Length: 266
Image (tube, rainbow, N blue to C red; front, top):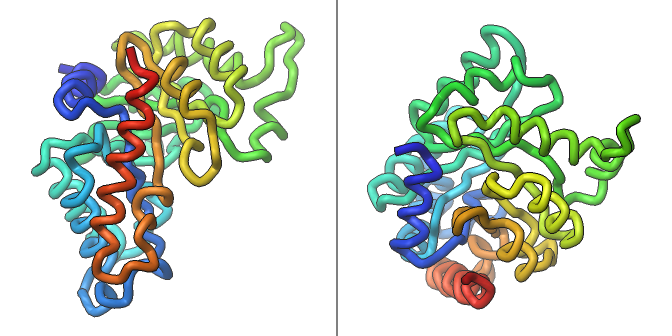
């Protein structure tokens, strides 16, 4: 089974399309966890315990783990999530050329899916695309305001760059393992992209603290019932001011988001 088949089964099992972003900002980890050798791992373990019944995937962002203790925490986090039967999507936005991108792609031996940057073209993504069992989410239309600086630029064909990226990703989907990252902050663009690439699942960030459109994220983010809506800070720091009860608050936030999104699912 490839990643999207496994994700389909996971979505049915937990009745959820919620992606929980595991972005353990060291400055926001509760004080009582700072005494541990790996505070980020201690934090993530408690978040996973509290949210796994509502999580379709966990999405750690590599930026929060790029130091020796961080990589150790990430390894423990991946193994623990897998122990709960939850897939792991690494938000790393990787791409390069030659042996560099081949080395980047070795992370797919440990995680189930990854985000990639299409700016360098197909050869920079080929080691990811050729892995038939892994999911590859191509950055297409991001939710940050500055994304428009490049993504909205119009080509000679009349298409915007993000629309060209969607068309290329659709062409690269030879193994049914490609999805798109499309932010929830512009529902009209979500709708247009869904019409353009009806078969690609979307990973939709921006519904949590960025205030994206939850209904549009569900209506246009899913392809044959498969897709993901991500919340990171809105879940993992929901109980930031609650001390040792922080994880319970995260569990409630994940459950609430699941219920909110499920109102719009077929």
